[in-house]
Amino acid sequence: MDPQTAAALLNPDVLAVLDSIEYSRAEEMQTQQRLRKQGLAPEVAAAVMTQAQLRVEARAKFGPFADSMLFTRDGLGQATRLPVAAMHAKRMHRGGPGLIADLGCGIGADALAFAGVGEASVYACDADEVTAALAAYNLRPFDAVAEHARAEDFDLARADALWLDPARRSGTNADGSAFRLSDPEAFSPSLSWAFAAAERVPSVGIKLGPALDHSLVPDGWEAQWVSHRGDVVEVALFNGHAQEREGRAALIMGDEGSLTVTEADLPADEVPVAGVGNYLFEPDGAVIRSGLVQALCGPLGAHRIHESIAYLSGDRPAEGPVAQAVSQYRVEDVLPAGIKAVRAALAERGINQVVIKKRGMDIDPAQVRRQLKLRPAKKGQPAKSAVVIFTRAGTQRCAILAHED
Image 1 (tube, rainbow, N blue to C red):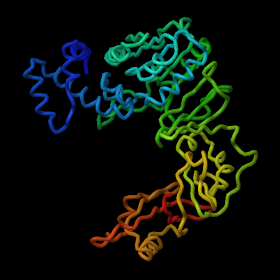
Image 2 (cartoon, rainbow, N blue to C red; image 1 turned 120 degrees about the vertical axis):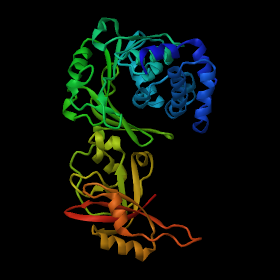
Image 3 (tube, rainbow, N blue to C red; image 1 turned 30 degrees about the vertical axis):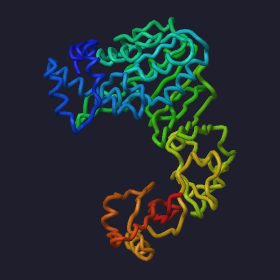
Image 4 (tube, rainbow, N blue to C red; image 1 turned 60 degrees about the horizontal axis):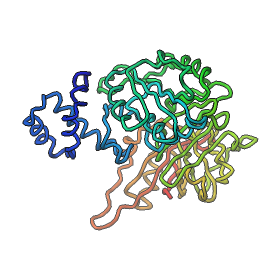
């Protein structure tokens, strides 16, 4: 969307038209024709339809708030999920009321949470003109200002707390998706600028991609990898008042609550490697990314099955809070990793539907599925399913036949 179309979209009359639409893909053509008959220019009608569609998609992140917000497609994809933004807000308000500066605000997801909690004022900016305009619209009910500006041009002396979400995409791939940058100095603003800015503000949070190299985290900071409903969504670096601890942590957020795993939970000694027991545990991605897999061994009564592969095993199922940190599989058999052995084991048990997982082995699950040549269930009979996990246990390549609990 160009700035001219964005300005037209923000016209109160056009917004009223948008608010009257309940998007339906089946009726998209008819709705667009109706908008044209109402006198909207083609590009504005198209923008209204896009917004109606994005509002429906955004409900997964923002719930009912999405119906009064504006988005870009990239902005929605990169926006912080509402429960995660609420966690950010709690951190940013730890220093007390004042001004929270959200530099690189996107469509304003985090700024909305900052402004909706506590008594602090919020300043937000984004280097993209259209994105900044939509953020200003989204923040209109709150004590917040959103401007089109570069993070580097903000007067840091104004801020009591600083939130940075450096842009990590530039240009587009062949499929039209944004190209993800891997060099922290190519971020906007760069990571070195962010760390320098952090030295001038009492409370700091920096949102980054979860693949961040651990060596880039400054000494004394907190690095918290976050998963929400099973998706690893970020690593957030905290310093000053926003910080709760030093070192690495994993925050696992779900519908039933949250669980935090920290470096303090790591055992004093390396957990030994042993064979596959009655249960196989796959740690949550935030635990894996944070390098805290061994912190789960004690609560699970589990051990590693390989020195460098993030599977754990034990003889009893996961119980209590730690169960939120793993997917668990009841082991039926440990087979050689060859297709013939796996196919024979599945046929012997009458299994005709499988989920194929892998870790530490270079296989193509789709190709393996074809090679297994599973026969469909007979008419009128339910499918019999299992999970086949290709991995390494000790020095052996194996296929673990299991069932998800």
